[in-house]
Image (cartoon, rainbow, N blue to C red; front, side):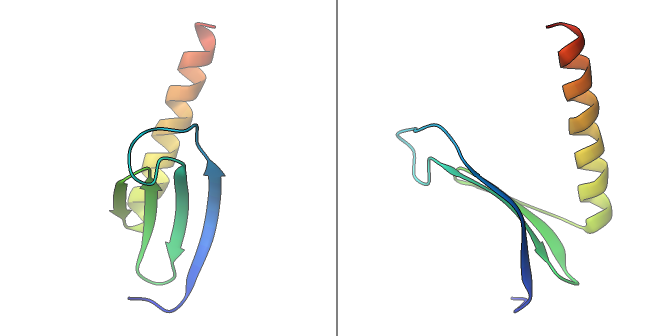
Length: 68
């Protein structure tokens, strides 16, 4: 485990009956990986994989907004 951890983002989600129902955190495990925690799910990616993931989410958001 990396002792250097930078929390890049965090928010509270609407309530859910699941464990950790409000958890959404993005962490930079400096020098190792990016962790995305969403409710009970943890996704681990390299920095480059996270950049691609973030770009794809941004693109999807822009497409969705065209339909609103």
